[in-house]
Length: 77
Image 1 (tube, rainbow, N blue to C red):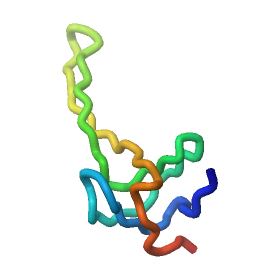
Image 2 (cartoon, rainbow, N blue to C red; image 1 turned 90 degrees about the vertical axis):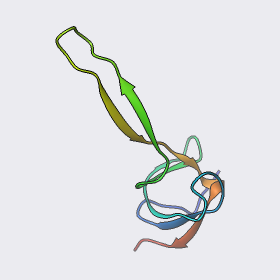
Image 3 (cartoon, rainbow, N blue to C red; image 1 turned 180 degrees about the vertical axis):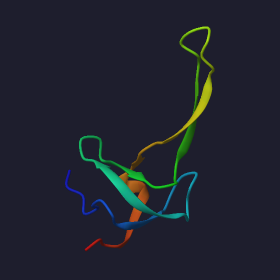
């Protein structure tokens, strides 16, 4: 499916948990029809230590959103 959304475009989330938020597209995943937006849809992953000497940590990851849930505001030049 062809999308009009490109990297660097300003968008608005129109549905879901982040409805009404604005952001900038950082990555387009054409295979899954999803986009990655800066500072939106951030999930927390708890990473366990690999060895006994290591410490576990919390990692924040940006997850993609389906392109049907966003609206294009301005195009990048």
